[in-house]
Length: 186
Length: 132
Image 1: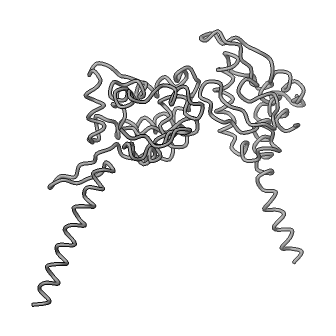
Image 2: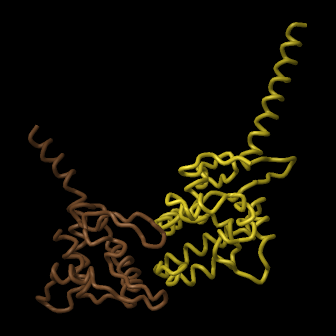
Image 3: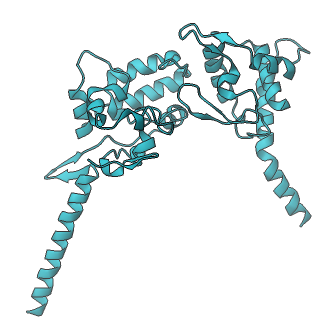
């Protein structure tokens, strides 16, 4: 009898902790539901060449933030990359394009990429992630003085300045820490 | 014990040597004719020479982002990215890879001068980086 109660308690404890961890995972943008594995956020960068070459100058944005057509255009115009010259040799360009288009928002499904795609026209190949409608709507509560007026941030393109888990694809509010201001909660 | 010290010294000297080897290799590839020489002084005067950027209309020089003091870190005028010092003595890791040297010469000469640098100019810059 005692054994049975013990086993029951164990099962109860296990299911409670499982559901709690489920909530925690959902909060961290990664969760599984039912039979289908769904990822809530863009997959982290998993390409050394891309991380080194592009990350040498700025945050290495996850490919999931733009559709394949945007990435193709961008790598094709690196000699005028938002006003900077970021030319690369053909071999590196090909390898980086290959990586970007196989991980792009319209190729690897996840909640964030879906929202990005919904906020742009099918005919457009947008380049600037920070000005996409979805991104702007996500940041509209933050006063400009904390972003563009903040020397330690500079612009909304500098993800990692405030989103501490940005490299891992974690962009939820709880991981936000604005330099000179602190955590941001609604 | 003595050998141990010698080995240790060699290991400590490795990065500096690697950058010297890479720079010599790149400079050799720039030499168009026997006996042509590179001059740190020419590199230095070009470093602070201003050019007008066609698109932005801004006056820029190498020193705009890198500063005129090669031993100091610079920062990119637009992105604010910190740029490590250019003097080989202050930044031994910077010049270890010939392909990387070429990549940045191509990008930054076009950005600053609006054209690629000549082999002579690039050789002069490298001598300047080694001289400070």
